[in-house]
Image 1: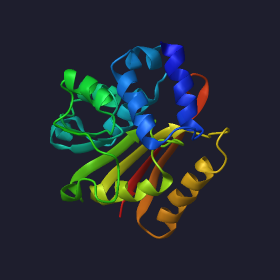
Image 2: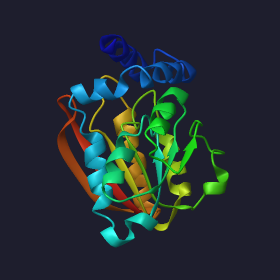
Image 3: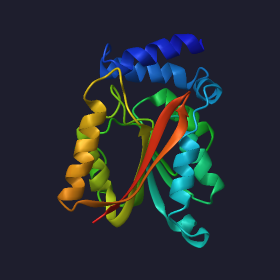
Length: 216
């Protein structure tokens, strides 16, 4: 079963399937061993993401911080954040099967089963103290231009935390475009980079990177 889904993931990453098909794959995977699959492959991205977020807030204020988990999946980051005392966490995830697994864990305040688009959760514009994603800034997942939506969800002075694979060698252009837009946001004064940290074993033996930005 794990090998089957890993092969489908490769298809998603190289653009062999449509967005709707990718969501269907994750729907099924979310309820058929997704957590066990990524755990067995030394996926430490969620732990790194949660520790990074926790470092931004004092223990005494964590229960008041409002967070949005974009591409929440089965709640791997949410589980870690709960351990650090965060409770006001909302999930945004297009794959209902993944979100159902997260709901069964009772991790989030709100569960939003939507694609990330310009008109998604308009009422939540400027609502969150911290917006984050882990593992979803990847080809076939979140388009590079969707970083604009991370900004609109975040309060002025709030934090945006991005954890991803350092480079997608098999998909030319994605990583380069992501870094270019990140730099454009810096140069135009939309956000300020507070952290860029590389780490090993993001997924299997791949190098990962976590960014922290402050919205200006």
